[in-house]
Image (tube, rainbow, N blue to C red):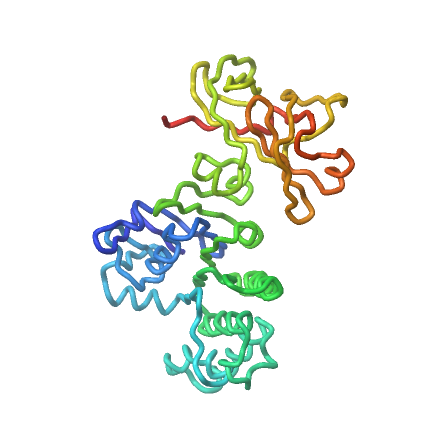
Length: 358
């Protein structure tokens, strides 16, 4: 559907995007995740052909649409872009949604049919005669999505579709998007800093950090198999340790780090310096008397605990720092308070290793 080849953009002599290569398939839902300022909006604007890139090309349907004005216009008529802060005009919801169709000089009958269908798709039919300026943030976002859908685009670009909305509105907009994706089978590229949202809605995810796409994969690959320290940190792998492979046998590596040894399933050879990644939810915390089959078991002491929703974050020191997550009930039953002696254990298969670049 759309491809970016070595795409880059600069403002005032500073590159905000560099060497971006993406191929998004027809009918795919692709999420761009990354911290604020990573370049997500800029990349969407380049894909939507609102800006010309400083380097590289955009292909739409296999055609280079970067430099030929007529090709850009033809391609843009097949796309819709919903901005992070959508603009609505001082007119009815119906007339707001009809704008794009009227600019294209569509027949009145076609306009009525398409606007009504788009409003029904986002659950806004009953608001069709309301002044759009009186709507809530979530309702305004749904009107903007309906306006984008009314022109029946082949590609829908969404920039932070639920940013600054309350949880109820977020849930409603996400529900609408899931319905639209299933109903229309259109290609969607969505930029979001809400990682669970990217996981829920997308087929694939691209991680954009400091203007570069560092990894592309399925949600499971991105969140369980990060390929770099930067991606691991961004997706919430909070246990990132550094060690050296000192033994290897049948695919099992022993990695030495300051304060202990960790066993992992790893292909790295003896002497290689690696990052050790363990997700907090993969760590089991006990009071040491329990027998476990986990290859990695360490005695330690709790440094700090903090309640996060229904879970408790447990910071431990076991010769090296570790962070675990347990339910509130487990924390109470085990009396997990600062100073308490505990055992932390995790399987070798729960450890991800990445080669250190320095």
